[in-house]
Length: 261
Image (cartoon, rainbow, N blue to C red; front, side):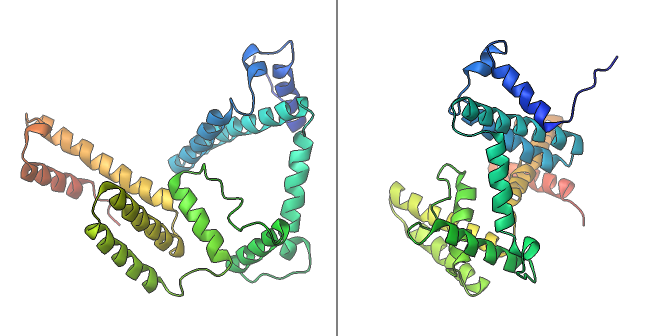
């Protein structure tokens, strides 16, 4: 007989509290906010992977794993007398209502761009005049997301290019500066500036930067693995081929695997 499990959020909270109790699980009782940092990050990335896989079953599962991390952290805080899950949900409820006056109040927003503008204005008021608009951007973000978030915050207060052409000119300028750079430290700086400018270009074009780069990486991997397959089928070792021979295999793989519109 298949056991029926409750879909009640409160019962799930009670389940986590039981795991943390003296009669619960030694591993769960041992955890702290700090010890769960890596697992929380991993679960967030697994949610992204599930989204990319287009599997609704996998996404449902991974969202559950991520929710476990959130509730477990809230339970640890409750035991320490800091806050509980009700405080978490109450806080985000209040924040969402406050930042959507065009839904829950009398304000108007004609499109998504205007919504984002109002969102940034409201966040600025919440911060007060002393805090930087960058203050809530975590330095621990992956570099690509970190650059994007910094640029989006700056653009939210009007510090942005008037036209895409200006960003493209900046890309060309950064390429020239990288080409002229001497010394590893200088090259690293100029390479970083070039990447930062490319992120800005992608942001202005409305691209999902992670998806774009991951797509290019996946295509490279797929084509390279096909190159290896071709070499094996022809009784050749890829590392023994000349660069010209490898290029020929690459072009063959690219032609074979290019996605048709």
